[in-house]
View 1: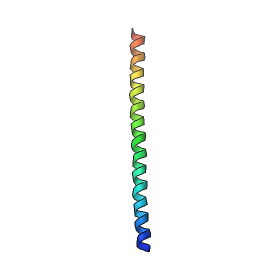
View 2: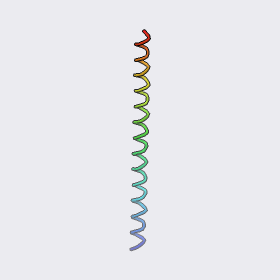
View 3: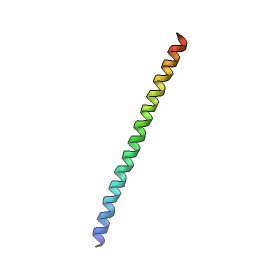
Length: 51
């Protein structure tokens, strides 16, 4: 009984870790996209002000 509970907890920990990692990866991807968008828009703004 205790072993089954322990295995269940271990499994859940793995699921929690995986979903936590997925969230972190998702946040990082959003950050990267945001940085790229900001970089591109600032470049366009610079280009239009120079021209």
